[in-house]
Length: 552
Image (cartoon, rainbow, N blue to C red; front, top):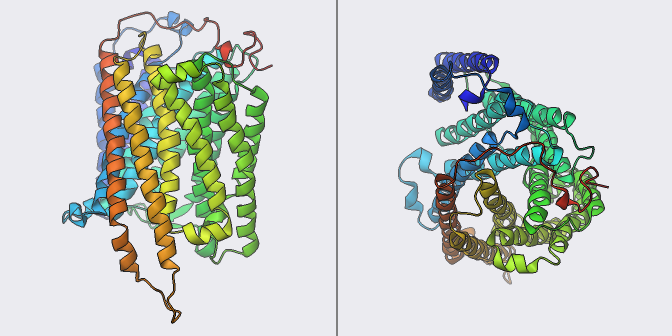
């Protein structure tokens, strides 16, 4: 990696790492509590490790100008590997906390192992660690191919990749130490938030600089979704995390919002994080990898654009449906419910577009587990968006809210949609990037697919059942007009479903481990071949039209 940087880039990287190490040292020294001191020490060690890495390769030969004739895929390769590492970590922690709900003693006596601290470790690891790294890696790959343009430099992609993972590391270690802003979606503290803003601005700049250099006149729709994901997530992150630190020496900060305003801001952030991180970004992935793998043009390019604008506009208004029956004004709740129901139209348009693209290629779906991952992802996307719109209706929400039905809905989207399309994209990308005819073992891809499908179904169905039973038990009254069941009775009734949920999660985790082994063996046995030149013809099969007019 370092040998690929120019001398100027190495010098700039050295300066940035020194600044990072000094900042970490200052935080560690100025911290008036052990929590901030520990985080500062972690930042210092990361910066120091980077400095030694630069020094070790500082005098490597200058890269030749010939590099500009080839796509720059090394950041994508690293991002895929890191994503799979986070997947295993996050899914392991997730299954651990699932078993804690069955056997509470699995929390041990240590505070860091409690459910309250490990749950955000799980969500951050799988959403931001696994999903975020996969989005960064695939977006850089797709951006270059659909633009026929190399990334603008060698340093900024690595800064984004490693800077982003430093943020994830600060988040998960902070949660285990008890550092959190105590919001519905647990958030890291102010110093990590500021760092992520810097990283994210560089990420957006990479995208815009590459598009400005593109040789294709048209911006393919996958890039629209990726750019919406990058831009809107930045806005959401900044607004939701507006806070005032107690002091430079404390990890604690105070939110700029309070009361119902804080709740509305939180769910504007929360639901749009689902919209633009977990939906728009992965739709960008789907719109490239599914037609590419099926070797079929997208069913309707115009429909993909219409659904893009529908999703982008409708989702922004839907967050308040999480606050039915609260102090939020009734009209705001109704507005969120209405837009959530309307959101079904553009969402199903994307799901239908993906499935109709497979017309004439169902034999490939039958024989190719990688494409089957993507097909199942499209099915679960349609299912999850229908369920989300349905659960946003106030009368349905009265039954479902605060129950495990919501957990089942979330994981139908997370496992069935996000993870499935990501695994499909990774299985497609690895042979392309490492120049193999296919994965190390097609049979292991099949094994992973069926473990993932089985785990998802067991998980989601167990949570649907437990959630509906919870909702019914909480609203059942006896003849005297009092509650028929105590809360603890509803908790005891959930135990069989929690066991099933933990088993489903375990199956999904085993599938991810199988995938890691398959990817590792594919990389290990990859031949040494030339890089892919930028001058290659673009992926015009995506839209089924001539190379110079891919979207017309």
